[in-house]
Length: 247
Image (cartoon, rainbow, N blue to C red; front, side):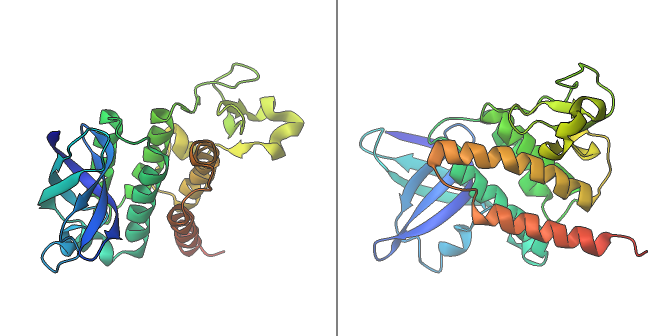
């Protein structure tokens, strides 16, 4: 068995004395792992970092075997993120989430394109945190749990939508929430595509998407969200506090 594809490194772990197991998110083969022989060497290891874009060739005797990768480097994203703690945390959250919740060896072409676009924005485009929030929404859709934010689940009205049902992922208006408001998740305007860069709003949006990602992670792998995602949310909250206008 053999194929060639492009992808982004998600994780690397040591395998034996000199090799590593590299997990990739590839364009046509989804989340896929393989052994890179000699991967701990000074020549190879700089290219085998989370977020790096590679062209890989995978080979195995049988399709269900782990197999091995050989690779050619395409793009390193270290320079754009190493000097920006928030961007570095965002990169860690993306790679950890993709590794944790995507099924193995299933192509996700739309999500791959969305992920590649966001990887390229990290630390470069000032609005990348807003793009990250919408990327988590796309991730939920890809996993079969898209949010329905078009109209209130109670009244049917598209007006004054300020909450999300933690059970169904549907929007709820202020009127429709009634006495249940304190049990609902926030629906900031940035989730509706009606906001510019606002760290506090984005953090609220990530509280909502994180609730559903946590449910999915528990169902699929019986584990909580990756710690890297929590660290990113904490950094974003600190950024929001720093950006708040003084009273």
